[in-house]
Length: 316
Image (cartoon, rainbow, N blue to C red):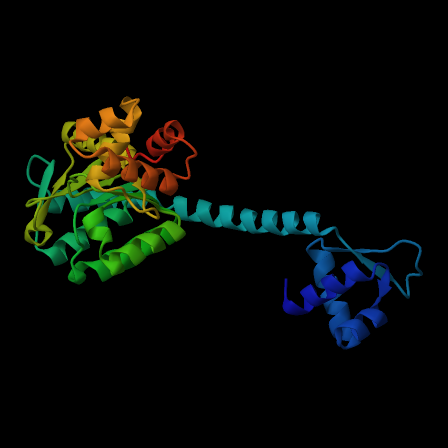
């Protein structure tokens, strides 16, 4: 709908059974422009000719906004579906290209590929992401080096706009970096699922549950990575990712410290504060201070509800 057509549509909503002359005056248009706008609205089903007026002086009504929006959305979706069908009709070409890629890049066994250096790793992730059809899973166990962050961000946002599903786990050490924290928020706003964890985390990327990339040195991603296509190994990496995902928390919330996690676990088991304090080898006063702070953070009226809320957030 053009700006002119929108203006006329709004006038029709406010003034039912209105003629062309009144439409032109009400919208500040010439008669020809008013007729063109009404014709456009009628063609897309947002305006109708009112009954009971002579043919030489017709009047017009607006279609109910709910029906109008639904009709516009349906037209848009139909167009998008046609575009998707045209794109998918060429997807068979990707399989042949991928086979050529694997033949040239893989080892003779066809299951392993070594990638050396951070630039080649980033390029490999981008290349593998291009061929992903369903989902990409990623973990970041520590700070993301500045040299890679901009490239990773640009690549991730590009594929999210394409419609790729993404799940990402970031370690709390990575989230301490303001740029990484903003990056995580941006990913979530663009549709990715992002969680954080203070627990040990392996560095990996899994593509369509069939191909995995792991760092050759867990402490230094710049040294290189190994691309794995062996189904058994990929299955183990998937299980590891899912376990880490189930234990991680939403990235937007402040993660509990190690001692706070211990207090939460003890709250779930110990009936009395004295017993909980003894278990953690701290004073009753300190234990109660931790409990009160955690209940406030969780918005829980009692300790039982706090323990339930902590479980729901994967804090324990």
